[in-house]
Length: 107
Image (cartoon, rainbow, N blue to C red):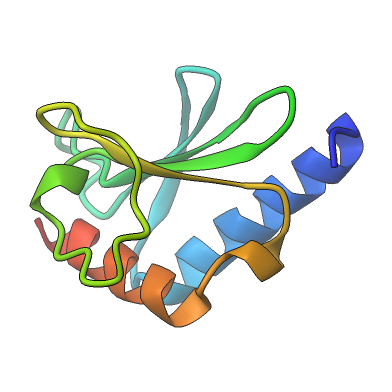
């Protein structure tokens, strides 16, 4: 999938899933994507973001290095961030994603 319309639809689906999975999650348009926070009054309080790239969509976890990624699904090796790249919802383990989102929002 590299049709931009399909990627935009996929990103919208993931964004809706984030809002369903994390009570009070609010979207903030920033850095060319949609960031999510549960504390909008605090600067840089976003727990994750959804970004559209040329050939995939990415969920980036702001403090992903601190998440309990027991299934080893997160990518990245930086000091803080971890991410998932995907081209369809079928590539995501929805239960694992929901757990990661809930944990990330609580950090």
